[in-house]
Amino acid sequence: MPERPDAAAAAPVDAPAADAGSAEGASASAVPAVRSARSGRGRRRDRRVYLRRYPVLFTLLAATRRRPALRLGRTLLVHDPQAYLDALTRLPLDRAAAGTVGGTAHRLGADGLLFDQEGPEHRRIRRALHDGLGPAGVARLRPVWTAVLRRRLAPLAAGEPVDLVPVAAELAGATTAARLGVDADPAALAAAARRAAATAAAAQLPGPHPPGRARAARRAVADLAALLGVPPDAAGLAGMLAVAAVNTTVSGIPRAVAWCADDRLWDAAVDPACQETLVDELLRVTAPSPLLPRVAAGAGTVAGCPVRAGERLLLVARHAAGAHRAGPDPAAPAPPRIARLVFGAGPHSCPGARLARAQLADTLAALAPYRPVVVGARADGRAALPGWARLVVRTGA
Image (cartoon, helix red, strand yellow):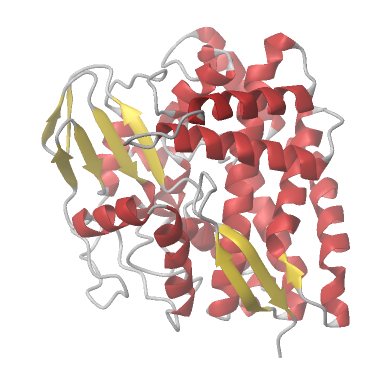
């Protein structure tokens, strides 16, 4: 979960033309050109998580990415960074519509004021989240995940392989439990949050659904609420935060490590002058939430396309941030206002970006002395977000 980008993120985006030599081709969007990754191996591997989980959707988005926005029936695909910003900050949005984050929150029973467009109570809850995930909150939580990293990565020193997916799951579960103040087993909490997200995502996919899919989604949500053990009036919000934190972490950290290993970026991971830039670049290309579904609450215009109330928008964060055009390059990074689009924009951007950056930075720093290489990987075909079901690394040369 990310923090609100700085004010520059809401300003118009001006940038040079696309780099035609990019591994995945140029785009019509106005994203600053960034040098491609050294080998392209990281990009080739990372494509597998999209093609395994959402092959049809990924192919559609790739085929249309040269258009700033494209209408398909009552759905508008938005790829361009300025159009993406306009949709998030200037278009009235229905925060409780089915298939959106707000809609999922209402199904979980969360207080809708967290996702409503306006209101003093909404602002109060947002401030509380930011305070808990600000510098002091992150400093308080850091010993939780660094202890997991020390213990779970220790086998690398003995030359043994380590699967990073369960490491990321325990890290996420332990941090989430500490953040919510609940006494839950980290692995069990992570598993429940991943199951709740996966069943909810499956229930929202278009097309015919097998019998019992909706029932399975409700049962997974109930299991997560029971595991959290918080009062009923707080269960929905706690569940939503657990689902978001766990799933983005378990998806994002192994993917970032794989890209770092494949493109040999470990020197930058331990260089104080490069580490922060590398983290932003890896988060940009892995785009923890690569696609933001939204529904218009009123009429407006996005990239010159009229939008009516009730129409759906698919905001492609991955393309808005230029992840399809340039790999992570700490020597020539995308500007922060572009890189941080993966965390949304405006008053409803995710409040946990500081936490996400800190966790990834500490994970890379813990791994860098071993210069790990990937020796086994299997993409996850069931998770809510594109990611790895298994990512095994061992100490490199």
